[in-house]
Length: 365
Ligand SMILES: Nc1ncnc2c1ncn2[C@@H]1O[C@H](COP(=O)(O)OP(=O)(O)OP(=O)(O)O)[C@@H](O)[C@H]1O
Ligand SMILES: [Mg+2]
Image 1 (cartoon, rainbow, N blue to C red):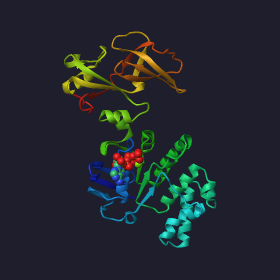
Image 2: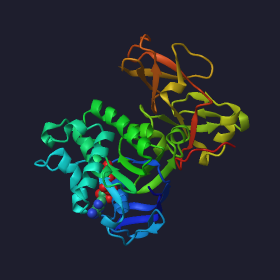
Image 3: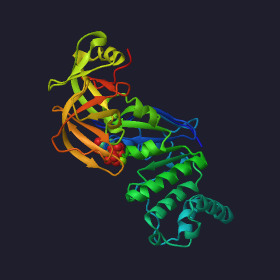
Image 4: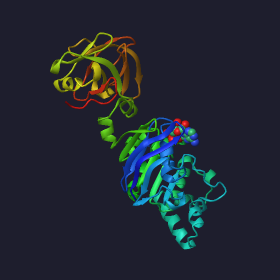
C-alpha cells in the first residue's frame, strides 16, 4: 500500500475550476472520503489521481513516485465505479480472474488470488454463477473483488454504493469498512452522502466549488466545522444556522435576532463574538444541543412550532424564529401543536459561532 499526496492540484476547463488548488495527504493505509455536493469536484479529483484525466497544474504522488505523466495502468491503482459493469456472460470466477488474465499471470496464481478475494468478500459460493443471478449487494462485492485481486497500492472508489437500496447500502458500508480494516488498504472514497463518510472514513475531505473546505477526522469536522458550509453539510439533520447581530460589550455581549429576540452568551462565547466583522454573526446549533421549553424562561429565544417530524426514536421539531428555522430533537412522547409558542435554550458549550460576513468559524478569544 502507499501514501497519496496531492500538491496544489488544479483542473480547469477554461474558466471552470473543477478542482481549485487542492492539497492533501492520504497516509498509507488510510481511508479518506471525498465529500461534497454535486459538481464540487470529487470525481474530477479521483480521476486525476487515477490518471484518467490530465492535471492543469500541481503534482500528484503515489508512494514516493510523482505520477503526473504516468499512464493509469502504471499507477498501480484499482478503481471501483458507481456502475461497476461486470461482464454479464462470464461467471463470477471469470469476472474476478479477468484483470489477472490480462496481466498474463499463471493459472494457478490466478486461481489462488481469486479464491482469496472471494473468501474475504464472502462470495466463494457464488463463483460459478453469472452476474444477473446475484443480488445488487453481491454484484457490488464482486466489483470490489475485481479491484482486490489486482493487489493495488491504492483503491479509488467513486460512489460505489449509490446504486443500492438504503438497507443494502448500510450493510455494504459495514462490509467496506471491515474490508479496509482487514487489508489495511489505502482508500480514497467519493460520496455525496456525508453519513457514509462519517461512518467509514478515517478522515474526510469536504469540498465545495472545487475548493477543499476542511480535511480532518469526522469527529473534528463534526465538532469544529471551519465554516458555515461545512457546518450545514456534515450532520443529519443539518446544523441550524441563525443570523443575528452582536450587541453589548465584552463578556456582556449577546446576540440579537432580526425579530427582536436576544440570546445571551456565556463569557467565553461573548469574547469570541467580538471578532465578528461589523457585528454580523451566525449562531450554529445541532438539534441535540438545544432544549425546548413550553414556557418563557430566562436566556431562551422565542419561536413557534412550524412542523413536527416523528422518526421513531427521536422527534424533530422545526421551530420558526422568524428569520430562521431551527431543528430541535425531542423525545417521541413530547406533544407539540402547530404554531405553538415555544422557547429555545442553546447549550453554550456546544454553540458554534460564525462570522456573518465571511462564514468562517470564530476562534476562541
Ligand atoms: N469535461 C468537462 N468539461 C467542462 N466542465 C467539466 C468537465 N468535467 C467536469 N466538469 C465540471 O467540473 C465540476 C466538477 O465535476 P465533478 O464531476 O468532479 O463533480 P462531482 O463532485 O463528482 O459531482 P457529482 O456528485 O454530481 O458526481 C462540475 O461543475 C462539472 O460541470
Ligand atoms: Mg461525481
